[in-house]
Image (cartoon, rainbow, N blue to C red; front, side, top):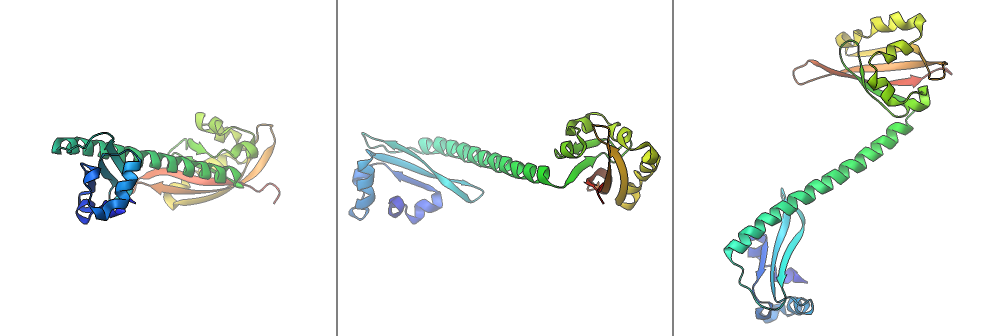
Length: 219
């Protein structure tokens, strides 16, 4: 209902200043009645924006007397407006990030493949292993990332040397495929299909290896 009071020049300034609600012209009788029902005598409203994106409004009001808002008042309240607008954007961005992370965690945990990232240099230490490795191998994800040599020890002795020789190949080829047996926490072995890819930084230097393991024991 205040939309009619928000003049074109106010929209440019992103501010609405009403020193005395009782002095509004007859054309603004409806918003005047609304403000009076709310006990508002003087009103100052700022549009909250961040990089041109409308966020809402920030209003200051007096109930019992008119007020002529000074330039100093307006300047100080504009600073507060900018602080609140930035805080809102950060809060919403953090909330959106948490929602995205929760969805990603659910999708990764439910995936039939285990995702990993590893350093692009010997001993090819694992930096991240998705949570569903617990279901696949019986090992918690952090057991792989806390012990740089655990993966090599879990590879079956019959193929351990071959797997070690294949590791550097991803640096030259960019991609690598491998199949091997890996020992579960209960001592049983599972056949895994591994696909890995090299990620480079902006300068073209090896940054990390990303890949996945797929259980092919029943194949």
